[in-house]
Each structure stands twice: as C-alpha cells, then as structure tokens.
Length: 276
Image (tube, rainbow, N blue to C red):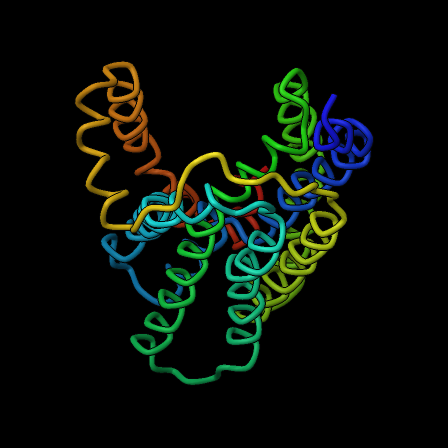
C-alpha cells in the first residue's frame, strides 16, 4: 500500500464524520434561506412579476453548471483540492450574510434598486457554488473510500433532511414572530451561521496530496476537446441530455410558496412549511 493510500485509510473515519457534518449543517442553513421558498416570498413582497420570481431557479441552474466548464481543467491539476474548496466556497456562503445584513439595514422604498441588489447577491452565490463544485466533488472522491461513497451521501443527506426540518421550524418561528422585512433578514443571518459552521467542519478534513496524473494544457485546448468527447461517448452525451431536461422539472418550485400565500391568505411562515 502506498503512503497516499495509507493516509487516506488512516484519516477515513475523521474525514467521513466532518464531511457528513458539512452536508448536514449545509442542509440546516439551506432550510433557513431556501431559494425555492423563502427567497421567492421575499421577492414577492417587492414585485408581482412572475419573470423575476422565475429567474431565481434559472440563476441557480446557470451559476451551478456553467463555471464547472472552466474549473475542471484547473482542478484536475491540483495536488490538494481542500485549500481551493475552502477559499472559493466562501463565495457561496458570504452572499447570504450580506443579504441578511442588507435586508436588515436597507430602508429605501425603491423596490427596483432593492431587487437589483438581491439578484446581484444571488448571482454571486450561485457562481460561487459553480466554481467550487468540481473541486469539492473531487475532494470527496479522494478522502472518502469508493466503497463508502453511497453510504456517505446517504447518511449525510438523511441527517441533513432530518435536521433541515428543524431549520424550517426555526425559519417559521422567525417569519412568524418578527415583522417584515426583519423576519427575512433574521432567517438569512441564522442560515448563514449554519453555513459558516459547515465551512468549519469542512476545514477539518485531512486531505493528503496526490500528484496530478494528467499533463497541464491551456484552457482553450481543454475546451476544444469537449465536442469530440461528447460525440465519441454516447452514454455520457445521453446522461448530460437527461440531466438538462430534468432541470425543467424544478421550474415551478419558486412559485409554490408565493401562490399558496396569495391563494389562501397565509402568512410568510408558509414559506417555511413548504421548505419542510
């Protein structure tokens, strides 16, 4: 067994635990700041435009997917992914802190300017997620034994779903007991605290260095190889096609909480109910 493999096995239990904690705490934070329920309802206080509400999942989709085309080449050559992950992943956490503070402190009645700031922050967060996605997934594939990949995501997502109910309950309390817009600000700031806790858990990962197995090539050359790869690999092409079409199933998510509140005259806490 090589020194690298020995290090992976020696730190496996620690890495399993701290990365499950990262998944679970991220889910807890996500239930407080949900871009499928809480944010659309906040946007609905500012505008009744279905286009702007529908932009939320679109921004999330593009921000998550597109940057991965440009980071894949870089990530493949990194001996350790964790430093990159920790630095870049702040861009998917800090925008929520800024959004919470902005809602709490901004008192202008100019809805257009408020919406502009909110969508700039949403784009920042979505792009942050996209730029870190490849490195994070690559790091998880390194530090978690392949025989335990399914168990890792199963346990992490199950715990995340369970405590996410607690996050939804906390969000419901905040949206019920505080007046708009402070109620949304507090929900985002509390969610941000859980995001930062997940970052701390992630930072406890022990990732041994592994020299890259592929030679460095310019980004333009890397991108120019992709069309040939898609033409040659039928299964990969079909997989990407199905994933792309599958995204359309989430188009209506942003409208559910908004419609329920308007249709049944519910309070803002209904967003937390939909999150749960």
